Length: 116
Image (cartoon, helix red, strand yellow):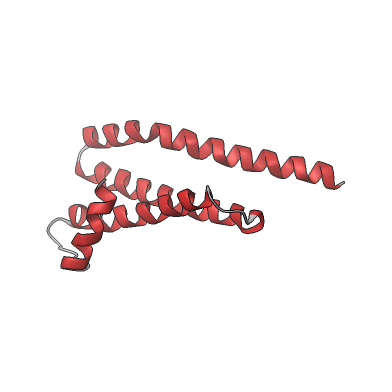
């Protein structure tokens, strides 16, 4: 939900980087990067082009991982308890990320065995 709220805020205020609170002002940009990754992943569910699909999966997951890491890094500098909550709530995403990479690698190995 926060990602969709960031779009009107960016249109209204633009990219405003304040030096007093850099983490809070960059959350909108981080949410936008995460939204782009999620939209790429969702659009791939309906894509029929198999050849480019794998590369776009990597791009979408990488954008989501980058935004998660930026949030964790900002929480680390802000407060240790906030970092623990942020990392703990991101564990299902990290497990999903690892499973997707494993399944893609497994599929690559299967197609290599069939090609031989």
